[in-house]
Image 1 (cartoon, one colour):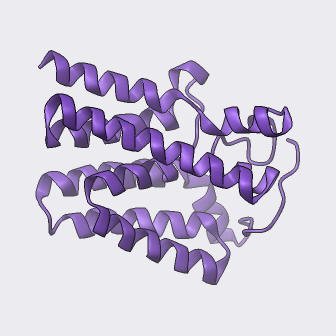
Image 2 (cartoon, rainbow, N blue to C red; image 1 turned 135 degrees about the vertical axis):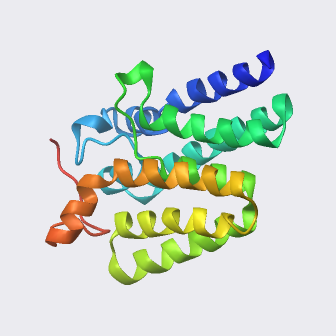
Length: 197
């Protein structure tokens, strides 16, 4: 039991490591939270610093999530791995070390999803990419893809559905402003550069 609790806590701490802040500091000597949307995530890095920096950030956030799930599986089994997956996304979205102001959790959720069920995760990723390619709205593709996750995971098992639902609800909450702008038609499209806040 102690190892399981330790795995979950460690996963949350791992989520606190912000790839976007590290990359933006090393890449351009800036704090990404002072640019664009102010969000400490891969999309804001992409818009502010370009494709390469955005990709590095995305990969870093996904890898830390994969690490958290691996730790959970090693220390407590599949059930603990699912909880650790949720914990690392919580740590990314609401990092205690950064004043509880983090990213929106999509890259980390992808890393978690790939670790838990690669086939379903890849289906969701493909759907998201197709929507982004068609509409140029990263937020729309991200939200639709993550909402598809629990629906597909329901066919795997109820605990997997609950896991996917937790990730989807966090993503919807973190994207609430984006959803509002999408409904108003004022959301930024892919390719639009960010400016300093």
